[in-house]
Amino acid sequence: MIWCIQRKPFHNTFGKAHNNIFLLVGIKIIFVLECYMKKWASSDAFEN
Image 1 (tube, rainbow, N blue to C red):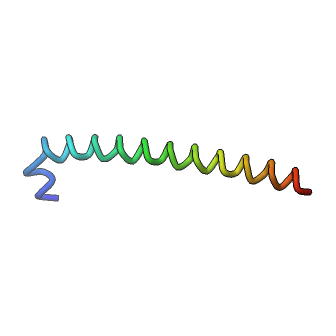
Image 2 (tube, rainbow, N blue to C red):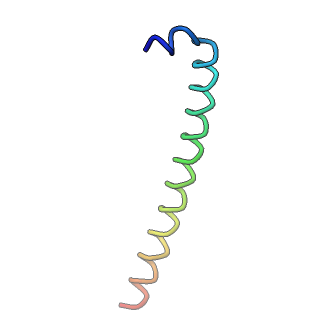
């Protein structure tokens, strides 16, 4: 906590960048999972 307070400008910049990266990765993972689930569901329905 003290380290974060002492280096607040760096912490804020890093925090924003980290949040953006996490958000982009999260969106990408959700997108890939959604596409995978749609393909799996459609192929499963097609096979049945």
